[in-house]
Length: 183
Length: 176
Image 1: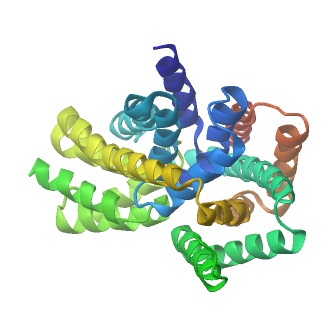
Image 2 (image 1 turned 180 degrees about the vertical axis):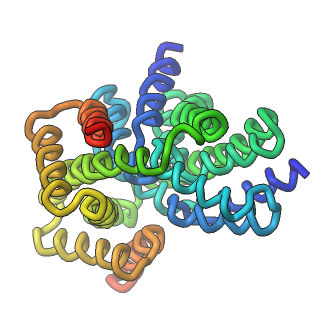
């Protein structure tokens, strides 16, 4: 019961301050689930981000489900997924119904734009951490090449992250088959 | 009619490789063109607000469409239709990945997944930096980014605190 309550509080917090949607919310989940509560470690976190990016549907729902599921099974997954989504859905509906005439788009924009710069900084800090961790496992050249290739494909060619991940999985699979290793 | 909306939301969530940027045009097709719940003008004003509030982009649009057409019952059904598929897909995928965890192939995949996730993050970082520079100008956009990075990375300030600081900064700026 204590863990369910903690899942509820943590993911409620992420949902209420999760600007940008999708993977942009991953650093806040990292803060709660890895750093504060220690529910998962960095490797499990990366797995969860990658799985959520490879699946159809909303990444925020999926990332929170995985953390909750690991801690408290299906019930934990359900609590985490609803805590991260429902409050912002209710808040949005209330804003649209009651406050839409009071709040202008310019005002909302003026508040959002600085927040996006902060979310970018948040993601940059976490990327730096993963970059350093990755140096223990791969050579610097490979890390730079893979991360830059992944960035270029997604940002400039508009390729969905799921396809980049699938391509990498296919590459690993084929290279192992060619080398005749037992999978 | 309410089941039509629920079904359409289910279809979108189960078959769309997500992200708000993908959900917005998908929901426009469904909610404006096929179901006629919103007029094009209303939908545009919804999108203007949806990106300025925290939370799941597609979920906010879906649940509001539910409320707009069928009240709180519509809100509940639309929300469920949006959230439940993600829970099911993730539990299945998570179990599968963990069962494979000890295999050779998974060990190699987890080696390369970190730099790929870094690349995914970089694409969002550049997009958001671009948006904030467009809205604030070069100097202000970069200064906020650098100061925020210093506070988060070097000073280990709580992320939510820095986000609140940015909101306050935005509010103060409008009122000057």
